[in-house]
Image (cartoon, rainbow, N blue to C red; front, side, top):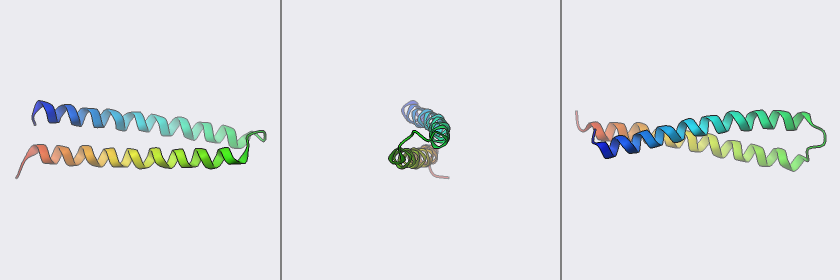
Amino acid sequence: MTDLLSEHVARLESDVVALERCVVRLQGLARRLRADEAAPSWLHAALDAHLTACVVAHDDLSSAAALLRVHASGPD
């Protein structure tokens, strides 16, 4: 794998880890806010939407990193 491709794969994998951490933090926040009666109901929907976006981005970046690794390895 070329240095440039290695850098791209590493960046994608770093972003995947960051998104994993984001999902965990958002899940914890959502649990705490759902337990708090003072939290407005619209906030739950906003958190759910953001969580979904993070999960989708995580999956997309994971797939992109895997495909780039395959591409970089060349034909078998």
